[in-house]
Amino acid sequence: MLVQDIMTRQVVAIGPDMPIRDVQALMEQRNIRHFPILKQRSDANEPDELLGIISDRDVRLVGADHPKAPPGVKSSDAISKLMVFPVLTADPQDPIEETAKTLRDNKVGAMPVMENGRLVGIVTGIDMLDALISMAGVHEASSRLEIELANNPGALAGLLERIAKRNINVSSVMTSRRDGQAVTMVLRVATADGHGLADYLRDERYTVCWPPQREVPEAT
Picture 1 (cartoon, rainbow, N blue to C red):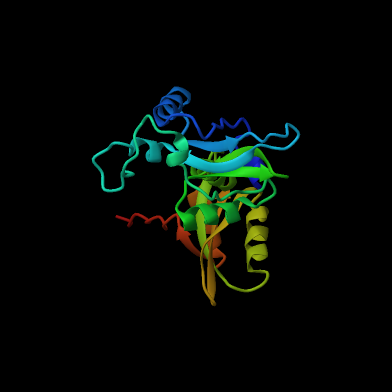
Picture 2: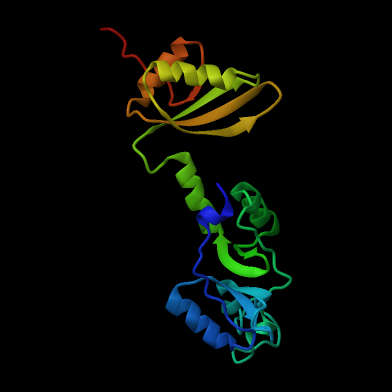
């Protein structure tokens, strides 16, 4: 999945001279948390210049009794006094996992998406969470399995083959832990009987971490 698959394309951008109080009002009106800040170029054929970005948190701190409140900045000042620059940007063709790592490493909530010098979208941490939910297949009726495999070529293929023998489709496969000896796979499988499939795989000598093994009632 690429950034272009999850980004917001209808981007609301603002100019550097807009008063901070007007930016805050626009954020509340549009329910938007981040605005890219663009400067129009004199040549109409040239794309607008990306100057910075602003978040709702930056705006809310203006005039607040908070240690991180920007000193000497008033709500009547231009947003250029508050904007963050230089700006981290993404490309539409960037893999989402690399973009998510950039967001996390730099502790930012959004990145403008640039293509050939033009602003074509914006991608946020919420977009990344939505992508994770989609990739994990949580929206579909399914069961979750967590299985520890030997960290060897063909181990996953063997597991999928056994699940296929039960005529069960696998919606998603992800990794939750890996070391030199073992890898833990998290699978979404298209069955409501996750416990039944887990019991079958245990009988096939797989280490199933989730769901837990059902207790068999003692005979009376």
